[in-house]
Length: 310
Image 1 (cartoon, rainbow, N blue to C red):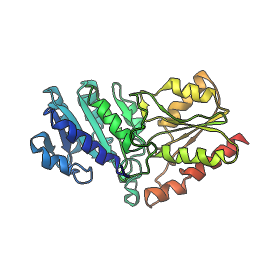
Image 2 (cartoon, helix red, strand yellow):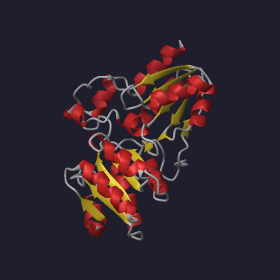
Image 3 (cartoon, helix red, strand yellow):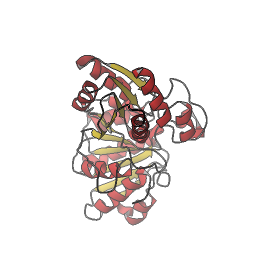
Image 4 (cartoon, rainbow, N blue to C red):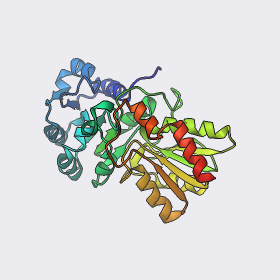
Protein backbone atom coordinates (compact mmCIF):
# COMPACT_ATOMS: atom_id res chain seq x y z
CA UNK A 1 0.00 0.00 0.00
CA UNK A 2 1.41 3.43 -0.96
CA UNK A 3 1.46 6.62 1.04
CA UNK A 4 -2.04 8.00 1.63
CA UNK A 5 -3.54 10.53 4.01
CA UNK A 6 -4.94 9.36 7.33
CA UNK A 7 -8.29 11.03 6.58
CA UNK A 8 -8.62 8.97 3.39
CA UNK A 9 -7.99 5.81 5.38
CA UNK A 10 -10.72 6.78 7.84
CA UNK A 11 -13.18 7.12 4.97
CA UNK A 12 -12.14 3.77 3.49
CA UNK A 13 -12.56 1.92 6.79
CA UNK A 14 -15.96 3.48 7.42
CA UNK A 15 -17.14 2.76 3.87
CA UNK A 16 -16.19 -0.89 4.25
CA UNK A 17 -18.03 -1.12 7.57
CA UNK A 18 -21.06 0.81 6.28
CA UNK A 19 -21.76 -1.89 3.70
CA UNK A 20 -23.14 -4.09 6.47
CA UNK A 21 -23.79 -1.65 9.30
CA UNK A 22 -26.47 0.85 8.32
CA UNK A 23 -26.22 2.58 11.69
CA UNK A 24 -22.90 4.15 10.70
CA UNK A 25 -23.47 7.81 9.84
CA UNK A 26 -20.87 10.34 8.67
CA UNK A 27 -21.48 14.05 9.15
CA UNK A 28 -19.52 16.94 7.62
CA UNK A 29 -19.48 20.72 8.03
CA UNK A 30 -18.92 21.65 4.39
CA UNK A 31 -15.83 19.44 4.67
CA UNK A 32 -16.57 16.33 2.61
CA UNK A 33 -13.92 17.30 0.08
CA UNK A 34 -11.20 18.40 2.48
CA UNK A 35 -12.05 15.45 4.73
CA UNK A 36 -11.87 12.91 1.88
CA UNK A 37 -15.49 11.91 2.49
CA UNK A 38 -16.90 12.63 -0.96
CA UNK A 39 -16.84 8.91 -1.81
CA UNK A 40 -18.77 8.08 1.37
CA UNK A 41 -21.41 10.72 0.61
CA UNK A 42 -21.85 9.41 -2.92
CA UNK A 43 -21.91 5.73 -1.97
CA UNK A 44 -24.11 6.02 1.13
CA UNK A 45 -26.23 9.18 0.75
CA UNK A 46 -28.76 7.93 3.31
CA UNK A 47 -25.94 7.55 5.86
CA UNK A 48 -24.44 10.96 5.26
CA UNK A 49 -25.40 14.35 6.71
CA UNK A 50 -24.07 17.68 5.43
CA UNK A 51 -24.72 20.52 7.88
CA UNK A 52 -22.75 23.26 6.13
CA UNK A 53 -20.40 25.61 7.95
CA UNK A 54 -22.04 25.10 11.33
CA UNK A 55 -19.65 23.14 13.54
CA UNK A 56 -21.70 23.47 16.72
CA UNK A 57 -24.72 22.03 14.93
CA UNK A 58 -22.49 19.29 13.50
CA UNK A 59 -21.60 18.00 16.95
CA UNK A 60 -25.08 18.37 18.43
CA UNK A 61 -26.74 16.60 15.47
CA UNK A 62 -24.17 13.81 15.73
CA UNK A 63 -24.98 13.44 19.42
CA UNK A 64 -28.70 13.37 18.70
CA UNK A 65 -28.26 10.66 16.08
CA UNK A 66 -26.14 8.66 18.51
CA UNK A 67 -28.91 8.86 21.10
CA UNK A 68 -31.17 7.32 18.48
CA UNK A 69 -28.84 4.36 18.10
CA UNK A 70 -26.61 5.60 15.28
CA UNK A 71 -22.80 5.44 15.23
CA UNK A 72 -21.89 9.00 14.40
CA UNK A 73 -18.60 10.17 12.86
CA UNK A 74 -18.41 13.97 12.76
CA UNK A 75 -15.73 15.20 10.33
CA UNK A 76 -14.51 18.79 10.44
CA UNK A 77 -11.24 20.76 10.47
CA UNK A 78 -9.62 20.23 13.86
CA UNK A 79 -9.12 23.97 14.36
CA UNK A 80 -12.88 24.58 14.28
CA UNK A 81 -14.10 21.31 15.76
CA UNK A 82 -12.02 21.75 18.90
CA UNK A 83 -12.83 25.42 19.50
CA UNK A 84 -16.14 26.52 17.97
CA UNK A 85 -17.81 23.31 19.12
CA UNK A 86 -16.13 23.00 22.50
CA UNK A 87 -19.29 23.27 24.59
CA UNK A 88 -21.10 20.76 22.39
CA UNK A 89 -18.15 18.36 22.62
CA UNK A 90 -18.18 18.74 26.40
CA UNK A 91 -21.92 18.52 27.03
CA UNK A 92 -23.62 16.78 24.11
CA UNK A 93 -20.88 14.21 23.49
CA UNK A 94 -18.78 13.62 26.61
CA UNK A 95 -21.13 14.48 29.47
CA UNK A 96 -24.04 12.77 27.70
CA UNK A 97 -21.78 9.80 26.88
CA UNK A 98 -22.93 9.55 23.28
CA UNK A 99 -21.41 7.28 20.65
CA UNK A 100 -19.81 10.09 18.66
CA UNK A 101 -16.36 9.96 17.17
CA UNK A 102 -15.07 13.47 16.47
CA UNK A 103 -12.70 13.44 13.49
CA UNK A 104 -10.47 16.52 13.49
CA UNK A 105 -8.96 16.75 10.01
CA UNK A 106 -6.02 18.93 8.90
CA UNK A 107 -4.79 19.09 12.48
CA UNK A 108 -1.82 20.95 13.91
CA UNK A 109 -0.27 23.26 11.33
CA UNK A 110 -1.56 21.32 8.31
CA UNK A 111 -3.11 24.49 6.88
CA UNK A 112 0.32 26.13 6.99
CA UNK A 113 0.12 29.57 5.43
CA UNK A 114 -3.48 30.17 6.53
CA UNK A 115 -2.13 31.05 9.95
CA UNK A 116 -3.21 30.79 13.56
CA UNK A 117 -6.95 30.91 12.81
CA UNK A 118 -6.60 27.61 10.96
CA UNK A 119 -4.06 25.92 13.21
CA UNK A 120 -5.08 23.52 15.97
CA UNK A 121 -2.19 23.62 18.40
CA UNK A 122 -4.36 23.56 21.53
CA UNK A 123 -6.73 20.67 20.82
CA UNK A 124 -4.90 17.98 22.80
CA UNK A 125 -5.05 20.14 25.91
CA UNK A 126 -8.63 21.25 25.35
CA UNK A 127 -10.21 17.90 24.53
CA UNK A 128 -8.14 15.95 27.08
CA UNK A 129 -9.45 18.25 29.81
CA UNK A 130 -13.01 17.04 29.20
CA UNK A 131 -14.02 14.12 31.41
CA UNK A 132 -15.10 11.03 29.45
CA UNK A 133 -13.40 12.19 26.24
CA UNK A 134 -10.65 10.06 24.71
CA UNK A 135 -8.00 11.66 22.49
CA UNK A 136 -6.02 9.93 19.73
CA UNK A 137 -3.35 11.08 17.28
CA UNK A 138 -2.41 8.18 14.99
CA UNK A 139 1.05 8.31 13.43
CA UNK A 140 0.33 7.02 9.92
CA UNK A 141 -2.46 5.66 7.73
CA UNK A 142 -1.78 2.06 8.75
CA UNK A 143 -2.17 2.79 12.44
CA UNK A 144 -5.20 4.96 11.60
CA UNK A 145 -6.84 1.93 9.99
CA UNK A 146 -6.34 -0.17 13.12
CA UNK A 147 -7.56 2.63 15.37
CA UNK A 148 -10.81 3.24 13.48
CA UNK A 149 -11.52 -0.48 13.29
CA UNK A 150 -11.09 -0.67 17.06
CA UNK A 151 -13.27 2.37 17.72
CA UNK A 152 -16.05 0.91 15.57
CA UNK A 153 -16.40 -1.78 18.23
CA UNK A 154 -17.18 0.53 21.17
CA UNK A 155 -19.79 3.13 21.97
CA UNK A 156 -17.71 5.70 23.87
CA UNK A 157 -16.88 9.27 22.82
CA UNK A 158 -13.52 9.99 21.20
CA UNK A 159 -11.61 12.73 19.40
CA UNK A 160 -9.23 11.69 16.62
CA UNK A 161 -6.88 14.26 15.14
CA UNK A 162 -5.21 13.60 11.78
CA UNK A 163 -3.17 15.72 9.40
CA UNK A 164 -4.04 17.03 5.97
CA UNK A 165 -1.44 15.38 3.77
CA UNK A 166 -0.12 11.88 3.25
CA UNK A 167 2.97 11.19 5.34
CA UNK A 168 5.67 8.55 5.18
CA UNK A 169 4.48 5.47 7.09
CA UNK A 170 6.00 4.46 10.40
CA UNK A 171 4.92 0.85 10.02
CA UNK A 172 4.73 -1.73 7.25
CA UNK A 173 1.43 -2.98 5.90
CA UNK A 174 0.46 -6.16 7.69
CA UNK A 175 2.94 -5.47 10.47
CA UNK A 176 1.23 -2.88 12.63
CA UNK A 177 1.38 -3.74 16.33
CA UNK A 178 -1.77 -2.28 17.83
CA UNK A 179 -3.68 -2.48 21.07
CA UNK A 180 -6.29 0.14 21.89
CA UNK A 181 -5.09 2.59 24.54
CA UNK A 182 -1.62 1.03 24.67
CA UNK A 183 1.39 2.88 23.27
CA UNK A 184 3.45 1.14 20.61
CA UNK A 185 7.17 0.59 21.12
CA UNK A 186 8.72 1.44 17.75
CA UNK A 187 12.22 0.64 18.94
CA UNK A 188 14.03 -0.07 22.22
CA UNK A 189 16.87 2.02 23.63
CA UNK A 190 18.71 2.86 26.83
CA UNK A 191 20.28 6.33 26.46
CA UNK A 192 17.29 8.51 25.69
CA UNK A 193 13.55 7.86 25.33
CA UNK A 194 11.81 9.65 22.46
CA UNK A 195 8.06 9.79 23.09
CA UNK A 196 6.04 11.21 20.20
CA UNK A 197 2.50 11.34 18.82
CA UNK A 198 0.86 11.89 15.46
CA UNK A 199 3.05 13.01 12.59
CA UNK A 200 6.00 13.48 14.96
CA UNK A 201 6.53 9.73 15.39
CA UNK A 202 8.24 9.33 12.01
CA UNK A 203 10.84 12.08 12.61
CA UNK A 204 11.42 10.64 16.09
CA UNK A 205 12.08 7.25 14.53
CA UNK A 206 14.40 8.85 11.97
CA UNK A 207 16.21 10.73 14.75
CA UNK A 208 16.82 7.46 16.59
CA UNK A 209 18.42 6.05 13.45
CA UNK A 210 20.70 9.11 13.18
CA UNK A 211 21.70 8.78 16.82
CA UNK A 212 22.40 5.08 16.44
CA UNK A 213 25.17 5.91 13.95
CA UNK A 214 26.82 7.94 16.72
CA UNK A 215 26.56 5.23 19.34
CA UNK A 216 23.54 6.76 21.08
CA UNK A 217 20.79 4.23 21.72
CA UNK A 218 17.34 5.83 21.63
CA UNK A 219 14.00 4.20 22.27
CA UNK A 220 10.93 5.46 20.38
CA UNK A 221 7.44 5.28 21.84
CA UNK A 222 4.40 5.97 19.65
CA UNK A 223 1.96 7.52 22.11
CA UNK A 224 -1.00 7.68 19.73
CA UNK A 225 -3.31 7.44 22.77
CA UNK A 226 -3.02 10.80 24.50
CA UNK A 227 -6.02 10.09 26.67
CA UNK A 228 -5.99 7.64 28.25
CA UNK A 229 -2.23 8.06 28.42
CA UNK A 230 -0.37 4.76 28.64
CA UNK A 231 1.39 5.65 31.90
CA UNK A 232 2.97 2.22 32.25
CA UNK A 233 4.68 2.59 28.88
CA UNK A 234 5.94 6.06 29.82
CA UNK A 235 7.32 4.85 33.14
CA UNK A 236 8.98 1.86 31.50
CA UNK A 237 10.59 3.98 28.77
CA UNK A 238 11.77 6.64 31.23
CA UNK A 239 13.05 4.05 33.67
CA UNK A 240 15.26 2.51 31.00
CA UNK A 241 16.77 5.81 29.83
CA UNK A 242 18.92 8.64 31.13
CA UNK A 243 16.55 11.29 29.78
CA UNK A 244 13.23 11.71 27.99
CA UNK A 245 12.30 13.89 25.01
CA UNK A 246 8.67 14.37 23.98
CA UNK A 247 7.80 15.53 20.47
CA UNK A 248 4.42 16.89 19.41
CA UNK A 249 2.70 19.20 16.93
CA UNK A 250 1.08 21.19 19.71
CA UNK A 251 1.57 24.19 21.96
CA UNK A 252 3.75 23.75 25.08
CA UNK A 253 0.92 23.72 27.62
CA UNK A 254 -1.33 20.74 28.26
CA UNK A 255 -0.16 18.40 25.54
CA UNK A 256 1.89 15.22 25.41
CA UNK A 257 4.89 16.89 27.03
CA UNK A 258 2.88 18.06 30.01
CA UNK A 259 1.31 14.63 30.49
CA UNK A 260 4.61 12.78 30.25
CA UNK A 261 6.39 15.27 32.51
CA UNK A 262 3.74 14.86 35.21
CA UNK A 263 4.00 11.09 35.01
CA UNK A 264 7.78 10.93 35.06
CA UNK A 265 8.09 13.49 37.87
CA UNK A 266 5.67 11.56 40.05
CA UNK A 267 7.07 8.07 39.55
CA UNK A 268 10.62 7.99 38.16
CA UNK A 269 12.16 11.49 38.10
CA UNK A 270 14.36 12.03 35.05
CA UNK A 271 15.31 14.98 32.88
CA UNK A 272 12.42 15.60 30.46
CA UNK A 273 12.55 17.99 27.51
CA UNK A 274 9.43 18.92 25.54
CA UNK A 275 9.82 19.67 21.84
CA UNK A 276 6.70 21.56 20.75
CA UNK A 277 5.41 24.40 18.65
CA UNK A 278 6.03 27.78 20.33
CA UNK A 279 3.63 29.57 22.65
CA UNK A 280 3.07 32.09 19.86
CA UNK A 281 1.64 32.25 16.34
CA UNK A 282 3.90 30.08 14.20
CA UNK A 283 5.75 31.24 11.10
CA UNK A 284 4.01 31.21 7.74
CA UNK A 285 4.84 28.23 5.55
CA UNK A 286 4.01 24.64 4.74
CA UNK A 287 3.82 22.20 7.63
CA UNK A 288 7.23 20.82 6.62
CA UNK A 289 8.76 24.29 6.66
CA UNK A 290 7.20 24.96 10.07
CA UNK A 291 8.58 21.70 11.47
CA UNK A 292 12.05 22.44 10.12
CA UNK A 293 12.04 25.96 11.54
CA UNK A 294 11.19 24.82 15.06
CA UNK A 295 13.36 21.71 15.08
CA UNK A 296 10.45 19.29 14.89
CA UNK A 297 12.35 17.07 12.46
CA UNK A 298 14.86 14.24 12.71
CA UNK A 299 17.85 16.55 12.84
CA UNK A 300 16.30 18.80 15.48
CA UNK A 301 15.27 15.89 17.68
CA UNK A 302 18.69 14.27 17.39
CA UNK A 303 20.38 17.58 18.22
CA UNK A 304 18.32 17.96 21.38
CA UNK A 305 19.17 14.40 22.41
CA UNK A 306 22.88 15.09 22.03
CA UNK A 307 22.51 18.29 24.03
CA UNK A 308 20.74 16.83 27.04
CA UNK A 309 22.94 13.74 27.15
CA UNK A 310 26.17 15.76 27.02
